[in-house]
Each structure stands twice: as C-alpha cells, then as structure tokens.
Length: 92
Image 1 (cartoon, rainbow, N blue to C red):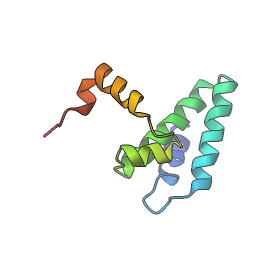
Image 2 (cartoon, one colour):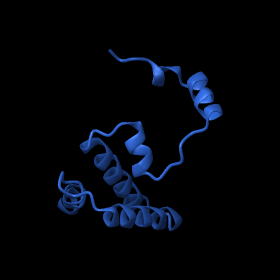
Image 3 (cartoon, helix red, strand yellow):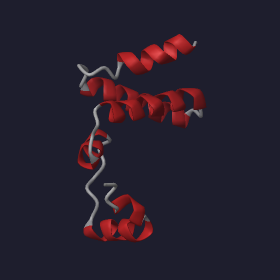
Image 4 (cartoon, rainbow, N blue to C red):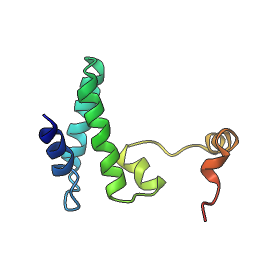
C-alpha cells in the first residue's frame, strides 16, 4: 500500500514531467474524492499537489497558474496584507 502511494507521488512529480494532463487528472480525482468523501484518496491528491509545487520551487505567480487561481484584486491584496502581515515580511 505505501509503495503505491510513494510511486504515485514520485512518478507524477519528477522534474521531467510538466504534463497538464496529469495535473488535470489529479485535480479531477481530487474533486471526485472530495465529493465521495474518500479521505485517503483526497489526502493523496493533496500530497501530490504539494510535492508538485515544492519540487519545482515555484513562486506565488507560478503556484497561482498551477492551481488555476485568478489574480487577486487590489482590495483582496490589501485585505491579505492586513490579515496576514507575516506573509509579506521579507525573510532575509
């Protein structure tokens, strides 16, 4: 069981694999798992997404594109800066 999980994550997140079809399939699988309340499968899909983002060292704009999220409005940015100031602090 654990070997299958490991292979699912690693086979779909290697550095040479930027296949949108894989990403779309995982997102559809994630949506189905959520709808059918299959927590282990949902968790696995979330883990795949996390590794996909981290393995490519993506910045916020790349992550937004990867997850197909719209750009925040100026009002949303301001609200986020007020609610989560630590996100906008320079870590250097």
